[in-house]
Image 1 (tube, rainbow, N blue to C red):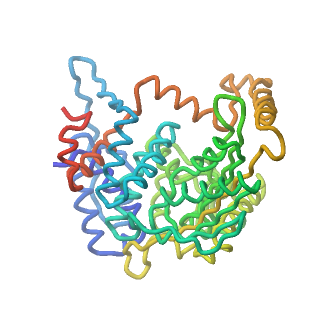
Image 2 (tube, one colour; image 1 turned 45 degrees about the vertical axis):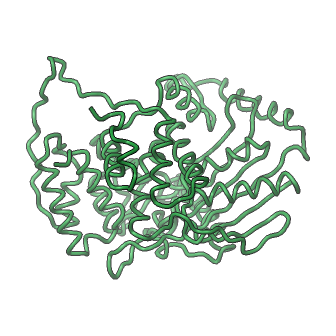
Image 3 (cartoon, one colour; image 1 turned 30 degrees about the vertical axis):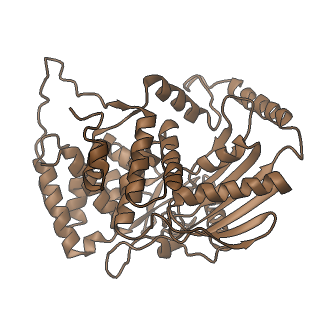
Length: 454
């Protein structure tokens, strides 16, 4: 029997990969069976928002179980902590998973490096947590492909347009940024646009490639529609990160990697787990109401009845038009050069059938070589001096007593996680690893016993 963590992950995957699933009788039946099993499992959370989503979206009325008293183990009553797994072990596991799908060894190495880098930086949403639901499940569904060629459609000394042919964005992205860097090192600047790619992992990986080569880096990608335009209510734009990387003489580069929306769905799911309202201005519904009812927001996001707001929030009181403008800039640079799709055409679901469909995304990559303009050491010293001055400036008496600059929290996470011996692996991700190990050819022989299995 599956554990509560496994069942919860399956339910979330079912919702996430089938936005129109509530319209499909077979998917509704599958959701009902899994929700009933989840309700009957030992460690179920009776306050889980999944019960509300089941009732109001899927028409599945499964009473939430009564809250159980905590049992003690030797009198402590404490839950067993998440195990810590070595980064090298985890990267190798992901590498082997990609190989099992037919990804070439060179590309599997790159893909697993992009994912493990996310976990090293403390960006848990884009590392191991994405392996199964975003990459493996989509390969299983035939909406992205493990080993497609990257075609050069047009190229000049300083620019290029590539076609990823719906291969893994995890190897398309590094290929494109590497091309931009090589052009920059030869001609001062390199710009590469990509069409027909797929999710390419943490955007911050790519500007970091540039900073390591002595360049300034910039990248962006579009995504499924989530953001409503300022004074609008319909999800039209992706969460579209606009990401810069700038070298510094600090121990880490300045890398700003964030979405152009006020919040992302993962943050709202976190609010639901904590039982707190969503901050006003982060979500707007079809009636123009700025919603704060977290459980209702998650329900209506499944139904397409509400949208995220751009950075700055709904309307213009807090200058939401600025975030709207940046999100639109990214969307333009990911579609206008590429003649690529956007909005509903990259929603990932066939509205007529409720089945998954490919999400052909666009990306862009810019590298600027610093040395032709100023010595790299001088540049790094100048940049580091400014960044340290910001961090050393007067702190708010109501704040945490520290000021960070972009890239520093990720470096802190890397230092902390390296010192503790790797990354924590929660039960839901343990379940995903077991499923992949048991399902993929050759993995059972290589991983008879995973580190957390007794």
